[in-house]
Length: 619
Ligand code: PLP
Image (cartoon, rainbow, N blue to C red; front, side, top):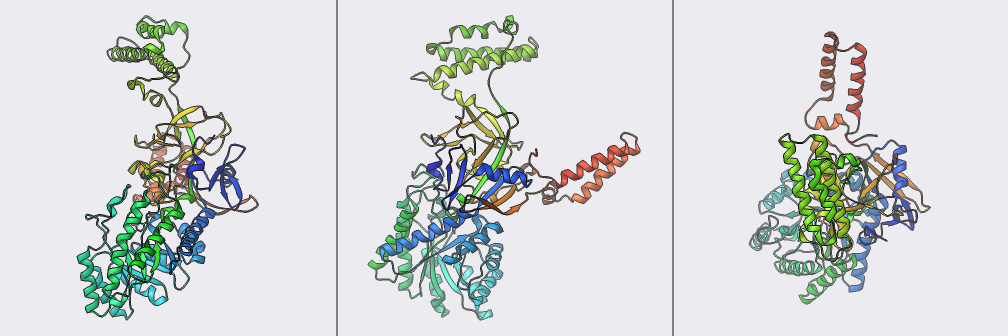
C-alpha cells in the first residue's frame, strides 16, 4: 500500500520498487535512492545531504515549455510562450547553470529582482536574444547593467515597479545612448487564495496603481519614448491553489494590456509572473499546500483566456511570459538524513517487588478496572495519582526510584488505554490526542532552520518518508526532532494521504548497527536560501546526480557543506586566531603542569580536525 501517498505527490519523478526502496524515476529508468546514498558514503559525503537530480529539473523545464506549446497549438493562439526562471527561488550556481543549459533549447530566460541576481543572470546566459526580466527596486547601477545587457543583444526588460524608477531609466538610457525595453507592473486587485495572497490587492506593496500607470504612460509619451513600453507584468502571488483565481486575474491583466495598447504603447509581451502551484500533499484540492489543476489545465487556462479576451477587443496576441519558480525547481531536490536516536514512551518491564511498593497502591489499582467502558475514568485517575506522586517527590516524601516506577506504571496505563481505544466506536474527546502524546520521537541528523525553514516559518507541508525498508510495515508512530537545541526544531505535522494531515508519521523501528534514512521531498524551491545558521549548523553537503537510461547514475557534482571554520567565520570569528588562542590556553596548562605536552598536542589535533569538519553529527 502507498502509505505515504508517493503516487499522489511525486509527479511521476519518484516511485517504489519491489525491494521496498524509493526510487528516482526518469527516462524509463528507476534508481533506488539508497544506491545513491551508498555512493555518497563511499565518497565520504556524510548525512545530511541535499540530493539534486538533474534529470528532474530538465524534465520539468521540458514539461512546462511543451505544455504551453501544446496549449498554444490547440487554442490557435497567434504568438509564442517564453518562460523565465526567477533566480530568487533557488540562486545556487549549480541550479541556475543547469536551468540555463537545459532551458537553452526553449530560450528559457531569467527573472531577476536585485543586482546580485542580475550579475548571476548576465554571466550565466550565453545566447543572444535570451530574455531577462528585471523586477524589484532598481537604482542607476542596476539600470546600467540592464542597458548593457540590451546592447549585448539580450532582451532585457525593466519592469517599472515604482514611479521613481522611470526617470532613472530615462536618464541612464539617454546618457548611454541605449534604448531601454520597458515594462510596467500593474498592482493587481484580483483576490487570490493561498498563503501568498498579499502580493495582489489594494494594499499590495508591488506595482503601479492605475493612476501611476497613466502618469508613467504620459511621461513616456512626453519624452518621445512610448514606443519603448512593450511589456505588462502581472504577478498574482506564489503557489496559487485555485485555477479560477488565475483565470480571473488574467482577465484583469488583459484589460490593462488592452488599454496600454490604446494609449499608444508598442505592447508585445504579457508577463503573468509566478503562481503555478506544486501539489505538495497530492490532495488535488484548492488549499494552500495543493492545487486543483494540472500543468496542462494551467497552460490551457492561460492561453484560452488570453485568446478570448484579446480576440474580443481585436488586439494582436502578445508573447506570453511566465515566471514559474517553484514549479521548475521544487521536485528536483530531496533532503536526505539519517536517524540518530529514538525516544519511546513505552513502559519498561518492572520486577514485581517494585510494583508492590505501598506508595504506588492507587496507581496499581487502576489496572483492575481498566475496561473500554471506564477508559475515561482510568485516564483521569492515572493522571491524578501520577501527579500526587510527583508532589510527594517534590516534598521529599518519596525517593527517585519510587517516582520512576510510578511514571512507568502511568505510561503502562496510558498505553493500555490507547490499545483499548483502537477497538472502540466512540473515543472520549479528552482522549483523542492520546496516541499522539505517546508517539516516539525520532531524532534526525538535520537542522529544520537550515534545510526546511518553511516548515517552521509558515507551517509548510513537505512529503516525508523513509527511503528504504518499505516492504516492512512501519509499526511505530513518530514525530521528528532535529539536532538544534530549539524546541521549535521539530516536525509534528505530516501529510496523510487519506485524512489530509496527521500529527505523527509511521516509521520503522531502528535496527541495531543499521542506518535508517528518511527523505524530505520537493524541497528545491526557496528552502536553501531562506535557511539560516541557527545553532551554527551550516549548509549541508550537496550532491547532483544524473540518471542514465541503463539504470546507472553519475555523480555530476558534489559540494561539501560548511565546515565548522566556515560557519564561525560567518559570525566574524577568525579560525586561525581561534586555533592560536586555544594553543595559548593549552600551552599555559602545560606550563602549570596540569597537562603534559603530548596531551596538549592531542587536544590541538582534535581542535584542528573539528574546525575542518562538518557541523552535523558525524559517524
Ligand atoms: N515572479 C515574481 C515577481 C515573484 O514575486 C515570485 C514569487 O513570489 C515568482 C515570480 C515565483 O513564483 P512561483 O515560485 O510561484 O513560481
